[in-house]
Amino acid sequence: MNKRAAGFGIILTGALLTALFGDFIWPTRAEPFPVETLSAVPSFDGLLPTLPARNTGRLGRVGNAWNMAFIGSEEQIIGALEEAGWTRLALSIPQSIREGLAQIVRWERLTKFPPMNLYKLNGRIQDHNWAQVITPIAKRHHFRLWKLPHIDQKQRYLWWGHGDFDLSVRWHDLSHVPDPDMNMERDHIAGTLKGSRWVESLEWRPMAHIPNKGKNDKGYPFFNDGRILLVTLKNPSESSKTLD
Image (cartoon, rainbow, N blue to C red; front, top):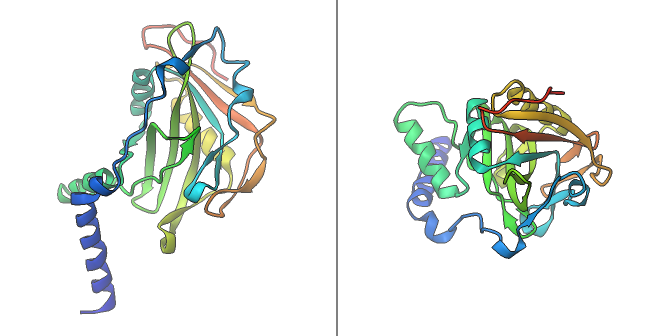
């Protein structure tokens, strides 16, 4: 048996064992925030500049920079993103492996694998993972969303997000090499939502506390113009504002 076949066998065996037993080792779900921390505000304008500029990554290191926010219910988030061609990925690594193996068995294109790493914001892992696959395993648009304990007068939540484009795989630590240009991914996400019946407005908001360049928890560089994409959602039956 050659080394390549042996390596593939080891990876496949590891994937199968993780799919079968991994949930006992890595039980994964986003912890709900305490109800008493929920705050209702007439507008999120004053709150946005106070939100964290970065999340937390591997080994507690400073992670990725903020580049998007959503205002909407979970149903509106899911409806808008699914219609825009985004696929929701499992938070659980074993679940993502199981879904990937199922797609392989059905001879389907891999869209729900590989899993996305877990990051934390205010001590909580992300609530949602979303991706658009370009090249299975290697290249994809993707972002994570955290539901925050803040609602507006329409009972819509504020969501904190980070997105970037995966260029390739760095195998030695099982991470993806991201495109350092965060603006490009932010604007791609906006482009997929422009004209959506779920979208009330799209805005680009400058946030002075966001670092314009740096490195994330894995040492990958990034740069941006300091603006976040603010996506305000609505129900499809409601009218939209003019989009930027």
